[in-house]
Length: 302
Ligand code: KMH
Ligand code: ZN
View 1 (tube, helix red, strand yellow):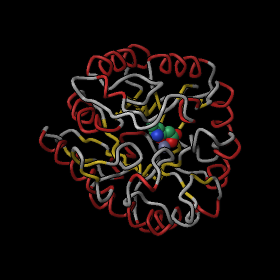
View 2 (view 1 turned 135 degrees about the vertical axis):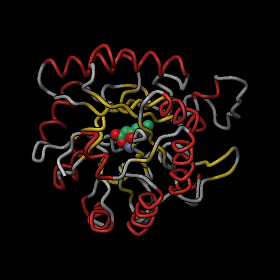
View 3 (view 1 turned 30 degrees about the vertical axis):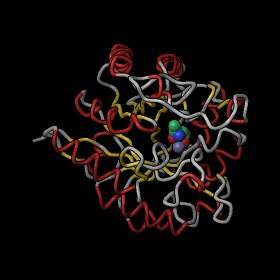
């Protein structure tokens, strides 16, 4: 049987703004339409953030989550993955408010504090260029995404009812050693689902040798007791997905991580990126995992 690859789709996030793309989902209705479309196209995990339906700003309010979360649960069999990263300017309590009320099957968990910007690190690679429109020292040059070991412990503690499986966001090599440390102290327990995030300014760049180093380090630390997936931020999205597929990993796409479907061409839906990565998986002789296969691979009870 062909190897199964899990597609996660991150529908909206908190970094991109409505002014960047008319296709970014904002309202509950948008989120349901985009989530159902992504699952029909092959996604088995939906990585979710809420936004204020009028302003489009990231929201921590349970009311806003309730505009799409139950509907996605009823209309799809996907694994619903609530972000606990929220937005870097939210307090930890705000980041956790909706997730501790809803106790999801999966939640994101960021493995360390870091500077954070979605400037394309990929611009440093090959001859890709970026036109800097704004001056240095704007707000996003001063953003710290705080995830101390204590914060991680609080997140694990508040999501202990099911218990929730974590999408462990790993932006650099140090985060793997943090995960190992937290495992030794029984804060987090294997098997792990590690999401390598490459291409965020403040994290590691989207290069094949970086992914190889991260994967071989995870092999050394966790042996068979983990699965990995890869996000290539911005225009590195499909390149990193292709590498992950070839290396035995899973993939994450979606408008949270990249607004485009091709150079200069906005993706008109999340499903469009899911379809594209599905074709990449099948071209590699592998198959897309269904939600129930994804649960089996990740050790999530059905
Ligand atoms: N926005 C991604 C680079 C989270 O929601 O916890 C990472 C992320 C974090 O998805
Ligand atoms: Zn997210």
